[in-house]
Amino acid sequence: MVSFKEERSALNESISFLHNKWGDIKPEVGLICGSGWGSLADIFPNAAKFDYIDIPGFSSTTVDGHVGTLLLCEINERQILIFQGRRHFYEGCGWGPVSFPIHLSHELGIKTMILTNAAGGINTSFQVGDLMVLEDHINFMGCNPLIGPNLNPKIPRFPDQSEIYDIDLRNRILEMSHAVQFPIKKGVYIALSGPSFETPAEIRAFQMLGADAVGMSTVPEAMICNALGMKVAGISCISNLAAGIASHKLSHEDVQNASNIALPKMKTLILMILESLLS
Ligand code: HPA
Image (cartoon, rainbow, N blue to C red; front, side, top):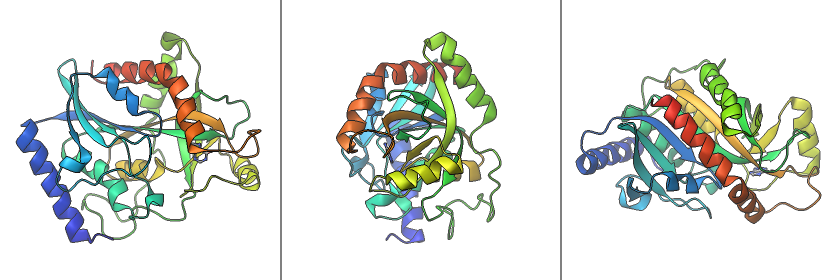
């Protein structure tokens, strides 16, 4: 596990590197691509980019489908940082690699973060390929990413979490349903540490707790963004029906395949969100 001091100096190194290479960048929006969302980067074929592994202080991804590339993109001459691939708590390296892109984004001036993921559908009205905007979440990861000293002293010891996912941004996204011509669902995301998928009994319990979708990410990043005062939107692609609701066993390959099918919808929606944020 990396110490606080090492993490802080890794963050400083990454920021200096990006400023050296990309100059006085002023990204306003950040986008973290979860499982199956990585091809969103195709929207910006001319983006400047670095593999995570080539950015000092940054750590590389370990999960299939998480490419590990940072892109600097532009819409209307305004900048966006796209993290093509994320780190997860279940990778076993603690919270450092999970929180790193959020702290980096915040220190580069990003005010709005879009977090995406693949999730299992718990709400029985959901279908594979649906997109769900997060209204709220349940942290069932068994741990809190804000424990211990925080990399940014701006983070209060006891952050309020009454509205993690910005209501205006959420409503704007839901209203886009007409323009994109497909339904956009809303719901509560429950996060577990993973890496195992859930049991059917767990899914029945989460149904009773009020969860609509289940996954292994997003919640820690959303909590850190919220504690830093950033605006957050969360979007899940329902890549499978959750255990016990699905009539088959679950696999990461199925998650990736389902997301590929939903990709045109994901790209259309994300482009519309970015254009509306940066118009
Ligand atoms: N459970 C947990 N995480 C997931 C799932 C699931 O069913 N689908 C995609 N990520």
